[in-house]
Length: 355
Image (spheres, rainbow, N blue to C red):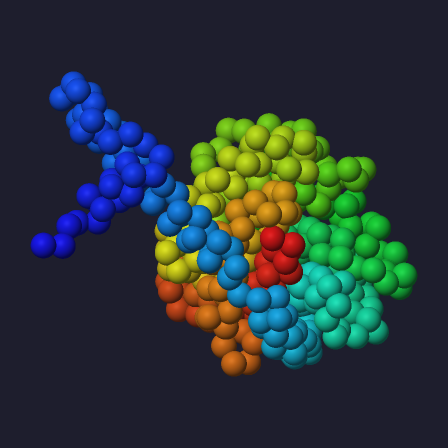
């Protein structure tokens, strides 16, 4: 009769390096010894399996596959961005700033994006913001300004418009209790209204940190944020991690990253709302934060799963199907959410490239 695997393993161990438990006189000691060996074997098997899983997950998709995915996205971002400029003639936070941020970032990583085009689009955006500022009846939308400012950090051309230097002083819509109110269509999002304002406030602080601004009280904004409740969106946790990391609060940043990791979906992605079906927008935000806040090599398995999710879900034209973030649209994709999500998928893939 074939003996079971456990008894065979016990015999191997007994004959090699450990004494035969049956040779021990006391029956209680024999039982304890057998249980100890069994426990050791079980722990060893679990450790080996965990290592194998982590190693396999960390290997993930190749850098060549990631590069190919980004190369497919660049023409989509260029084409649809220019179309928006031509038809809408406005700098929308989910369109032109996302376009410039992602394409500047791609160029800095060696992708084929013409600097002359980036110069042209950047100048166009700066002029649009200046035109609004010069109108006494209007204020430049804070969300547009800060996203342009943050995206400018990837802008390497010497042709950067001087108007960008005035952006911090155009951020004049801070409320009396310290926060910046989200503008445009953002208040219609499917998350608590305060959370949307908190996200705008955190992005604004991220853009203004280290910059003198006549029009902002950063200390008041930080105090207002302390009274808030934990957010429900991946974006909120991502920008919280980024702001904490930039502000020299690493423990707070790592807690935010831990929250994101805890809520990673089985397919490797994140929904824009934590726990919802994965999409490129939520996944891009999460990868951007992990890539910026944590040390290279940490969370490699989670990053590899997320990158694999993005590569598996990318469409042939280089975009991702992303549901609207607005309450009224529920889970239906729309052009603005598709564009926004595609830009953030590219940013996330680039920022996680050192993982």
